[in-house]
Image (cartoon, rainbow, N blue to C red; front, top):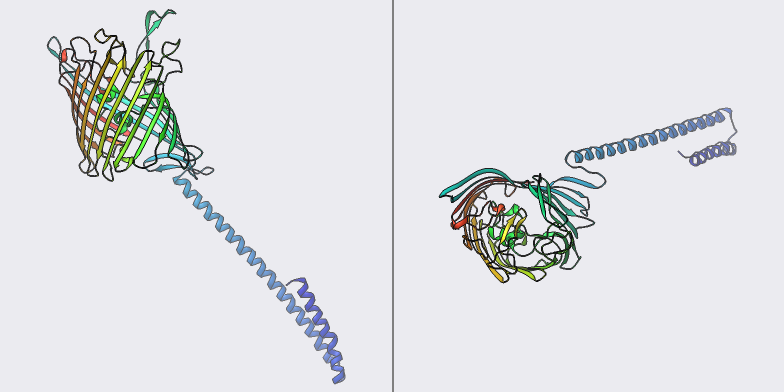
Length: 496
């Protein structure tokens, strides 16, 4: 009870006490018992007032205690929920970490920042038979190799419009390096232990101009020429890319470039880049012939256009039909022109791919390489095919080389996938005694343990006329005299 209420009641009691005798005096003579009765009533009322005040205090204390207990219960529930969240996610200042959409990742609660690591592992057992290689005898080799051990990160920053991608591979072999004097003359060799050393493959960032179909990309990227070379090695039919991709496109075709992408998310998209020429990965800014320069070309320009007849673009990120949700048909065409002084090279490609939810897939391509050079055949180096050795047969004149490719596969029960590939390449400037055309017939089967993330491959390749150059990526070696060559591969692939 408030002080004001108590005062009002006391005033009423006093008034009653004062007025009561007056009223009694008008009606009858005042007596002592009446005064005693009035005093007792005042005492009774006062006691009742004290009782009500005590009850009000007790009720207020109970209300405050109930509120405190409710607050404690709410805090305990919040702490319990937070502990449960921490048991499955790391939540620090709005960032979460976990496994989502088959990927590990760390990202902010609003999705503006994301960091996703990944790993790619390929273990192979190779058996190679080069027929009549030495004095009428075959050469038979067998052994294990780590074809790929890669790791990388991708994600976005400051929003979903700014994305990035970085990945490294490991050097596969050690070897020797030449030691030269100031004049560039070889004076000796020294061993190196590069096996297992990280090598940068891709490093790019891409920005999307909001509410437009335009993106800019810059860094070390795939040269946008040929679908098989652009597609990650994680999502290929066979154990390895095609010979065509390795020789004409220089394996993974990494190059330093800046470019503009037009992608309205409709049926067409294009990419145009300015690069430092094909095979310019991990080089400095200096041009050919500059002191300290390692680039084979002074500059290059490249571009690709793709047209989707039907299907989803997301299913076009592979060479095959794994987990296709609807029929897909895409045609693409790309080209790269790289120049060094008066020497230039143009590589152009036209390709098409069909995939079906039933598991059936087809891929075909035609590539052409026109070169004005004095170099000769494109031979294989640890980083891919490159023009090294001069050949009098083509010195001082232009050469034109081409390749045809077709491959197909069919997945049974989302698990087993037999596939086949045929390639025909017409080369120029091949070494004396070798054939200037190459045929490859490949057949194999994939067993998808868990899609591309855990896959086992058995594959056999036959080159009826051999090949005039080494292609270490495909595990084929030069066979002089056009003699046949068999390569058998068993490969385990794991992705994280």
